[in-house]
Amino acid sequence: MEGTILKLPRLISLKKQYKAYLFIDEAHSIGSLGPRGGGVCDYWNVDPREVDILMGTFTKSFGGCGGYLAGSHSFINYIRNNSCFMDSTTMPPPVATQISKAIQIIQTPSGIERLKSLKRNLSYFRRRLKEMGFLVYGHRDSPVVPVVFSSLAKIDLIGKYSLDSGLALTLVGSPATSLMGARIRFCISSGHTREMLDKVYEYTNINRL
Image 1: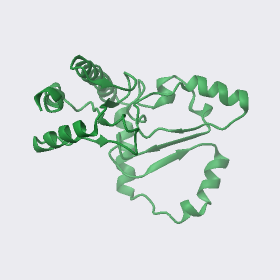
Image 2 (image 1 turned 90 degrees about the horizontal axis):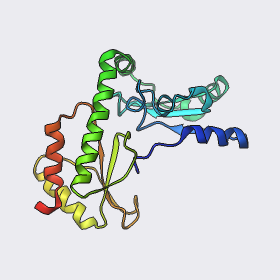
Image 3 (image 1 turned 180 degrees about the horizontal axis):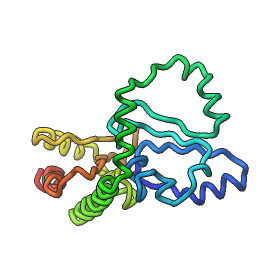
């Protein structure tokens, strides 16, 4: 929700100090964060085996459906024999093939270039929003860019104007946020062009409304 990036080395240090288990949700980082798109472990250059359980989705960066859990053999065997897993529906083979291919593509030179393009888009998008006077949350490398408003009325107005202009925005307010923390939540892609991003500035410019 905040577009932040956890300090993974610090969490691993605390995990070892207190003999705890570390469970990380990679829903918004896998496939988009790190030099190879490997998520927070790739971003911090940390061995994934330092994390006890990694969870993520195939619906965002990979454009598929379903998700995954990664962990030790004993943990995975336990999950496989759990009623929640045994009674669930298997992922369709074509979708599994598509996801596997997407992972392969991300690791190619073309995929690496797309990750670099994503980083350039993020830098440009965040900089322009700040120049317009918006309050922008989150880490500079996060593909999730929350723009915070103190008024739900402003967000509703921007959302309606943008939708009428052909741009659908993700609007988030209370109770998902605090009363004063309503926001528009942008998820930037390497496929966005500068022209597309500039349209967002035009549609969300409060001074025009």
